[in-house]
Image 1 (cartoon, rainbow, N blue to C red):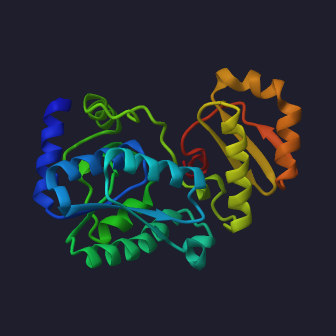
Image 2 (cartoon, rainbow, N blue to C red):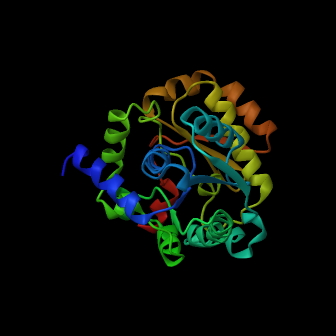
Length: 266
């Protein structure tokens, strides 16, 4: 089935689920889902962004602005993930506990709005990665329209491009806790250091990047073609990151790759 066929299948799927609450992040996946829900269901759809210390402030603001630009009805709800001992302990299935906590707040808001169904933007490509959160969401009755219609990440980008969504090429993002090795405690201070370090580097236009935290060592991941620019500015970068609380600042010579913390699981 081509992109056009999957587009129609997705719209039909959304209509079949009926009044819908969309878990919204401002990424390509959830944005496309929210737009289709708005078009297919009108006032019987709404979006919720779950705000938390693991979400960068810039991402919240971008999502808020995007929803306004697209005419999406958006609620922003604070979720205290760090109050959960299971989440803070950062086990290999950390995302399972995260989604379990998130589901409580999504269900509460859905009930308040009289929306019987909650949907997220998980897609078929995600099922080939380490995604314990998918199990938790499914257990909580959250539906996955992209999986149900066989849509991969590339399908979603193709459909988003066809629909004229300006963010169709937006890089994938992950919560800040994914920068901390499994088994290392997640704290508000660690999340702050990571967020501020990534914001500093992003302002210097190094493209897609991550700052992974190992103890107090910063491991910077950027695409290999910009490593030279990183090294040209290494004194300023090192000084700034050390001022944030890092003891050492390193550059990962393997470059940026999604989910590098999961490599220890292989």
